Length: 499
Image (cartoon, rainbow, N blue to C red; front, side, top):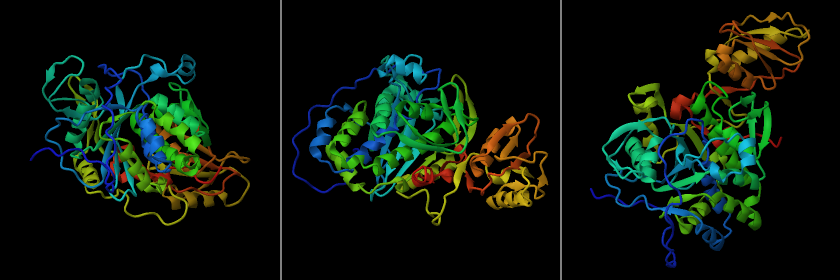
């Protein structure tokens, strides 16, 4: 079967446009090697907002004037043995390190030390449904076990046969084309467009939007990136947002936990762009699009017309129109000689996920009834044993808290007791540091509670009910390794209300 050319978004016929100027050669030099330190892992989110911003319908002239600043790469030329095209459109988003464009002061402030590697550690597949009413974002872990097709090394010119490596290393060996070929080989999903950004445009985009609101039920602290968020709602500036999406030492989930935060940030970014009114203000629209497109590299087929058509079709797009997930992982530490520890996909469940993309089916079929959505947590409440104590003089409070936690799914003892502390104002969660992820799940169900680590506490967590107790928030397990079973809609993870 002859190879089929990459598809663009479907659109009505129009008068012929003047020919575009010749594609600009790639602006970056690819260097081999993977950074030893954690790199920024959310450059790709800025590119998604290009589509959102175009939906304002400001006009062809504004976007086409900015289109000239986008570097181009002709990566689909001569690609063979590609998957058959499905329904909808698939975009591969790749984030690269561009810290060389950040000022020295900002590098120190946001802990962006080290030399830029011009490599990638963020890969996301975005599926836009054929009716342009849904977007599905699938994170592909950078350490995924992969087998790259035979290719010519972009740096050395040497020819390589097919061999195993980590997914993010495909970019260093063969640039964008090898990355696309490898992803297509692993997913059997045909990639229609390629978009690549670095984090300079990420920071600028967040700042010109006036910041992005992020909510957290527990404290998020990472000494490597400098992130330190207290429980509650925060409006992050560009640099602070960069810390949020880069952090991988917040908990034991490492990169997989970081990808969940990246997805939540992307949902919040879409919410900000579509609800702030910035899209209806021509001057602010111009500033935002300049920030977004400032460091973008795209395939030659994704031009002004495609961008505008897709944006107009998605004019009513919102966080509830989006869904996010991570490819299912079957083995967390799959050893490969000469490569090290990798993440091995769960082939059966991954195939189910990518089949849904090929067939243009949503991952979330049934929507929850109107009401407060469940808060995503790492550990299922059914797996967490809890002993409730009444830390106040209010009779029956311990029984009330025990029943509320049990109704939410927590495995309570069913036998609340009176605490040795009798004047507790703020509910306390006492936990063994070895069960810190379980403690954070309980804390998500008890907003405003205090976490108190006690070594040798054991697997049973203690909840000392305080005078501040109001109710228990619903929580739902979203393990990073569960793939599509952990898919969430964007409106389920953005901040609720105006606070």
